[in-house]
Image (cartoon, rainbow, N blue to C red):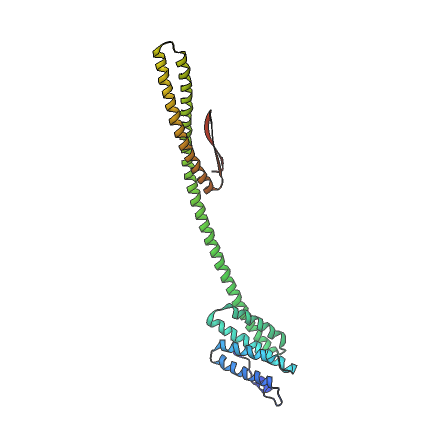
Length: 264
C-alpha cells in the first residue's frame, strides 16, 4: 500500500489566497513525500511530523482537518516502513495510534477501507511480536526453574551426605562420652576399693583400676568433645542445605546423644 494520493491535497494547498502556514505545510509534505519515495523513511517521519506540527496553526478548520488526516495516514505508513528496516516495535505502536486517529476523522469510505486493511496488518504484526515475547519469557522462566531445580537437587544431595557424616561422628562421640562415663564409674569404684583394701596388693590393684578409669575419662572426654562438635557442624550444614532438618545434640553426666527432627 503506497501513500495517499496527494493531488487533491496539493491542489487545495495551492489555492489562491492560502495563508502562509498552509504553504509551509505543503512544502514539508512534498519534501516528506520525496523522502518516502526514495526509501528514506526516517527522514519522511521527521518531515511529516513537522508538517503536522505546523498544520495546527492553519486557521481554516476544514482545511486543517483535511491536511492532518492525510498526515496521519502518511506518518503511519512511514513508521510501518521504518519498522521493516530497524525492527523497532515502537514504529508499529505509533502507526496503530495514527491509523486509529485517521479512521476517526475521515469520511471517505474507500480511504477507510484501505486504512482498516492497513490497521489490521499492523495489529497482526503487533500480536505476533507479543506472542514471540511471551514465548521467550516462558523459555526464560523454564530455564530459571530448571537451574533452581538442579541447584536444589545438589543442595539436597550435599545435605544428605552432611547429615549422614554428622550422624556418624556424633554417634562415635556418644560412644566416647560413654567411655568417659564408664571411666568415671571405674575411678569411683577404685577410690572406694583403695580405701577399703586390707592389703597392699588390693590397694595397688585399686590404684591401677583408678589410673585406667582416669585414662578412660580423659580419652572419652576428648573424643566426645571433638566428634560431637564436628558432628553438630556437619548436621547443621546438612540441615541448612535440605532446609527441613533440625538437630539438637545433648550431653549430661548420665549420657549424651543427638535429636534430629524433620523430613528425609
